[in-house]
Length: 290
Image (cartoon, rainbow, N blue to C red; front, side, top):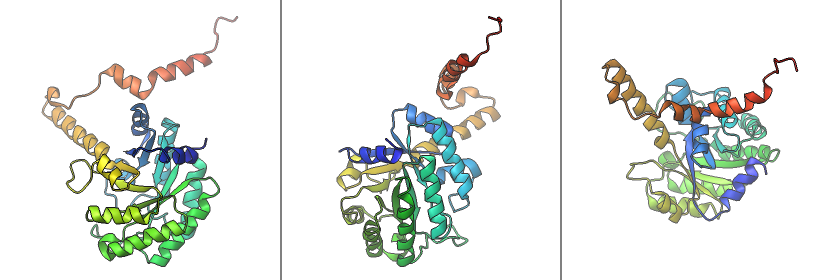
């Protein structure tokens, strides 16, 4: 089965599908090793890891695609949903982006309706018109037919245009053939219910943030009608915190204060040293002359 077919089958199962956020080979390998079948290649996490910067449309298509390629190579059986932002331009850019990820083995791609290039501020999420959003999703769905990659259509218009417009866009995305629907920034549980109802039986996606009072638990999300969700802060925040603590421990010459770390043997296992040796041993030349 292809990655998109495997994701379709997974979404057809009764349980909620948790999708940890990944951003490189190590996080993808560890996610697969922990038993997860899916992961979200998060734009915010890739921006943090590659640029050391904010998720404000600074990443290029090439940088994001390179991160996808590294993650897929490190964990080829992990089903990856690639965050493609606004498709990196107009509808033709969207089609190029979707085709590239589909051919490279993505299970799904995310396309959103934010304005590009974005305004020079971190505040707000201005979005393109409803008609332009329709064309972007239409272009994505058409391009996706070549590989079968699923299209996750996201609307960011809730903060600026209101929930009625957001729901109307989700309904429109369903009409255009989007496979998964995503309302960003719902204000409360009622808006979440409206969004999942507008998906008309197709899977709805949600961002679940640990510790957030607004975010539902996984079971609550399922009760609200969501089928699949990601947890960007659950992996990125601990990494940032651990690095900060480790640097402080080095500065203070107090390595005992560093966060708990794995033993060298566990680190080597995680990074695949044993797998490397097992494969490499099959290609060692016979130097005995026999």
